[in-house]
Amino acid sequence: MLEIGIIREEKERVLAGLRKKNVSDEQLNLIDKIISEDDKRKSAQTKMDLLLSKTNKLSDEIGNLFKSGRAQEAQALKSEVADLKEEIRTHESVLREAKEMLDEMIIQLPNLPHSSVPFGSKPEENEVFKAWTSEMPQLGPNALPHWELAEKYNLISFKDGVTLTGSGFPVYKNKGARLQRALINFFLDEAIAAGYQEIQPPLLVNKETARATGQLPDKEGQMYYCEKDDFYLIPTAEVPLTNLYRDTILQKSDFPIKLTGYTPCFRREAGSYGSDVKGLNRLHQFDKIEIVRMEHPDHSYNVLMEMVAHVEGLLVKLELPYRILRLCGGDMSFNSALTFDFETWSAAQEKWLEVSSVSNFETFQSNRMKLRFKDEEGKTRLAHTLNGSALALARIVATLLENHQTADGIRIPKALQAYTGFDLIS
RNA sequence: GGAAGAGUGGCAGAGCGGUUGAAUGCGGCAGUCUUGAAAACUGUUUUAGUGAAAGCUAACGGGGGUUCGAAUCCCUCCUCUUCCGCCA
Image 1 (cartoon, rainbow, N blue to C red):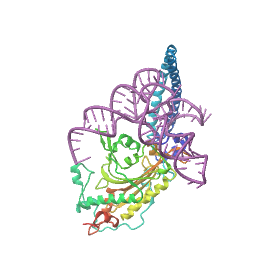
Image 2 (cartoon, chains in turn red, blue):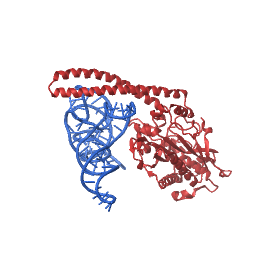
Image 3 (tube, rainbow, N blue to C red):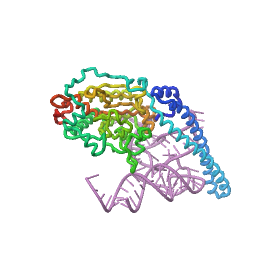
Image 4 (cartoon, rainbow, N blue to C red):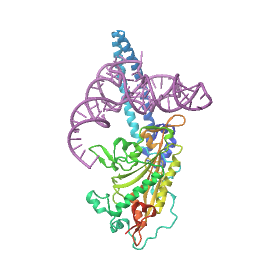
């Protein structure tokens, strides 16, 4: 969430940023409401502190009076304290209400976009940061979409998934399963080679964790929820990995913090039925390797580009046609200040599929999470958090199958062969 | 799931109704001494709100209560340890 200090002190910049993100007028109007609510909070706090201070002093006196045996005087003071407490209670409730209101309002505001974010409201207005300039793979006349390839080579059963669970839960089999496992290991090894620390987190998290990375309250309906235990199934490893540093104060020497983890990701995808759900395009459960960074604000944008380069390297090694987009204000996620999306070409569907999203959240998550560090002058400041998929499996599998299909079968890219143990699916 | 015990600062560990935001030790930081280092000694060392600052306020697992006053008493929830049960 946005920092209240910035909302107060740089109101115009905040408004400009929010406009770039195409927020509603209603949300823009929140800014003034927030500032006046915060004034209310401050004045209630000040008044209450003053009264508490008085009460504390009186209590000391009462103690002393009792000790010196002057019980009558003590009794008189007691009634005075009783009055004060009455007053304190009213300020207390004002304060609590103001805090709740503030929280509720601030949480509705998305992050401010970085200055390099293009204006725009639709996906078409995203900037092609790096286009694919090489040849597109030329598929033969009998080229198939990945769901047919999956069936033809007995790699994935969508039907069995429906039997076991429902749509969007595919069952991987044989070389399909082996390919999944190979990709997971490949991506993890690449991340480790790049200096990331491997983490195996829980797949279920509590409310507090889901809130800290911003999944709650705004994405509540997108997560699977275990009511009996009040746990959420993670929609991405970002949630547990980032939360590892919730409520901590880092030393400057702790940077850089580089985490990676493989997890299945669970998404209800409520409201997205109908389009783009064929095959592996959109699933309720898919595998993903995530990279997460906690960084000094001075370096976070360099780190973002470093992460972009890492993800790009993976796609190159998988020999897949890809492009990189810089998302426009309206297409960016709620939390992000700058996002690069990676898309690979689905040769048979003839469209680009998003396989990675790499973002800098600046202090948006760390503010909610209270992730701070001690700067050069010993001052406590919020750290920057970043994350990216490196990489999301299902769509990678889809484009891998489609792009590398030949008359003889599906060719496995060289970099992956050591992991699969075979070089052709036939 | 049942029983008992425990949760205090970076760590260890006192305090169990009043000047204790918290003894003491370790660690960290700064300094004295030293050619340098170690040792020793001195000082310093939580976070948050508010304020220009001094200061004031809050926090001893979370929440609530008793009291003029709570780290200390009561209730409740959570977590950990040990024992029992169940189980990959």
